[in-house]
Image (tube, rainbow, N blue to C red; front, side):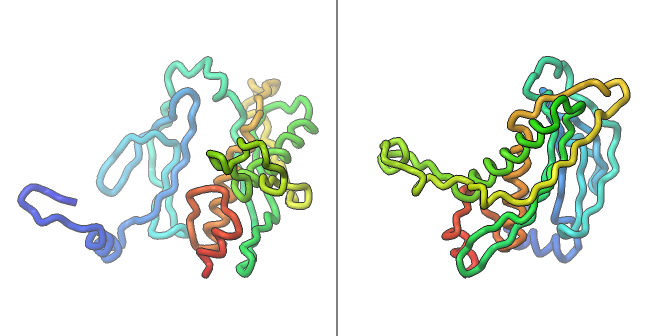
Length: 231
């Protein structure tokens, strides 16, 4: 931080002052996109600010967060016709365990909440959700396609190198489907496609961060990478 005529303040000095004065250091936000972001005005200690999100909570740590007061939600304008944004919203919770000696990750349980409106064929929706969990697990934990001559493009790769999720890796799963939001929408149905896969990867990475104390920012998170941070 710098200002004209003043000595610059380094990052460590700012952090020390933030901690000394017990200012908020952690924030959690939720955003909704439908051809544009929903907006609202939030009241911070420094004043009001409009943000492209529909929920903001702040606190001194991840276990001590308090929602900020907000104004009315402002929906995006002219969002009709964005077909992709008509897909069903989904959220996920993931429980996993990590073996410190081997770095092996076992996904123990997954809970997915899905707002798909009227379910025309529940079995298909459940199957899509279960497949999405397996697909996201492979993406986060094992699947790698390096570029160049050493990658699968050389035509010599097989399943000994491209490691995807197997049936024995798939955890217990629970799918919670929400009813249509209003009486007027009681007959509506929303497409799910890969939407049920979207929250699984970040939920896995959050669980890994809690289990190891390290935030992984590149996938796949292999056992070798986990052992390295646990040494």
